[in-house]
Image (cartoon, rainbow, N blue to C red; front, side, top):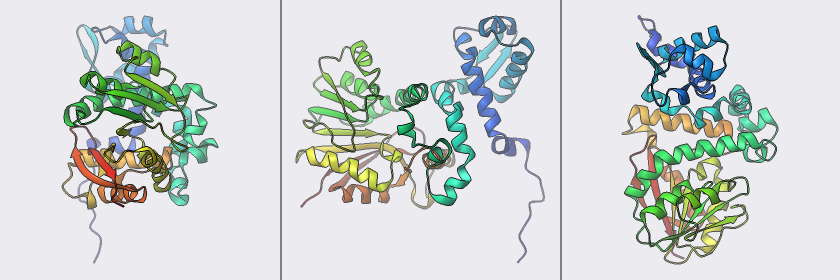
Length: 342
């Protein structure tokens, strides 16, 4: 049987996002990094005002603004340029994706697929989290990007997961403490601990103080590959396990299992890939699939199906007991696990 060739060529709307997605991203990222989006946040600005604000080359900036309007990042009316809803997605996350070490990683995706190695390590000579030790700017950009994700996910987590059952929450790999601040703010009887590396905790004390939580929330520095703080009856892992392969994930969960009380719980907040792509919203499923490839590029990790998470939990002595879909993009779920019966 001969293969069927489409009789109609792909439209520009179909092929441009695929063929020139890199260019569309850089248009939005540059509008953000130049300060254009910050300038139009409080109202429209003319091209002349933006040239003065950014200090950019006048003709080149006008060309960028024209492209940003066509890309849908900005709009233009008689009063000047305005941000569109799409512009909200440019900022710390796009700054991270626009960073040179990250672009170098995506350049070697083919080698990553051929070898199974992290593209970031291939391109930059060190795994992502080790690389942060010598590139503080990228580390700060990464943690700011993760905070941006928490700003979207934390409200849904607080609304749809029942924290009232617990006494002390430990946020493992909790970074700046954005999630735990939201959790403790909504549950005044809870106490908490943010646990992360020195790099991840650089701004945590300030975040907790600003939220008025310094007395209710401690900060502990360390590596979750070595141990985690005891004393919690709920351990959170938000967007952590997808950074690590199964063996590494089991090690993290195993360290939690060692200090988990009999009535304690572990909750993983993460995208969950649909089994065989069934019953998935196409856009949501695409977002989760892109995230999975990003894990291949940036880390040793992966997005997982529910059954794959079940196996990882079991290998660490835990049993998946509840699964809660959350109203966040990319098939986001709360996966609750308890100590497995001996």
